[in-house]
Length: 411
Image (cartoon, rainbow, N blue to C red):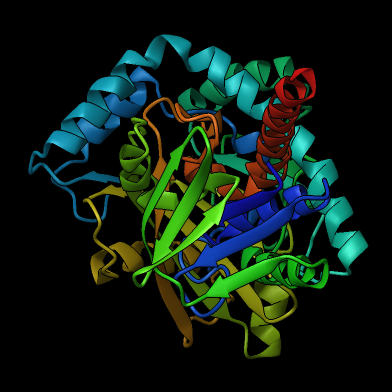
């Protein structure tokens, strides 16, 4: 188990390749685009947010989704047209509701562990990615939402996260530019933000510097594995490896099925806008502290001096990558309402498909075949969890490698 193929050049694939290389393995990464991080890892919300570890498998989420189903601008939108994939996913989602508290706590624990690796790798490889370690402020407009957040805070604390309640006056001291009336908030000083695209591309360059191979523009047509090895087929040519790690985002479901594994990943579309702060007044009026508006399901990040990112919403509509005006307009309206001094003359919209499993937990580790591994299904926290899940799957590969060496020595 020396030569490993990694499928997917987003944040999870690139971090996985890097973690494997650091263990002395020979790594080849396949990415269908010409560059790393060109799909879901291109323009996300930018938050490295252990404070956003609450999983969605909660009855209030189900009720909100049903209530919002006919609203085109709803924060959570479900296309009512049934498909077997969608129905099976939601059935498993509901079945996971009893594990809501445990999964929220475990996600917070993983998010905290991920920080150490992500920051260290950035220092080691000298990656500039607009990192801002100013914390994340969750904002609430009514008492009920604030009290729910207090209950979530206790679950996060069980995972080791410290976040504290703040009054409206304290909120304005933390972020003076925020406009509007609020019941209160919660502030997590240890959270941060950054540009996922810059980070992933910087780490991909480090993979190549360290001797890894990245095959860009290579659309993998099929993969396979047996007890003797694994293989990847691209444009009619087969390449053989000792092991295979699937990090292919929403494409992971199909690849897993061909490998004998059931991986019920559903593509949940999220939208973002990048507001270009072209004038001094806008730069002064935009926030520096990252925000999370639970009611609107939006997050924000300040990316350097001249960009302001707003992202969020969830749309269950299959493999649809269209950027809809009626989904982008609420993001622009939110900026104009909460930060009226920010100009919105130049706003760049984007949409990406989050690979989400029904229980909201990533699939990390071995598959049915002894030479197959997975690191996928991170949902809305791929950026936040990527470094720790890369470490975990790399550890799994090394354990499997040791197990294969022992029988040969015994012989």
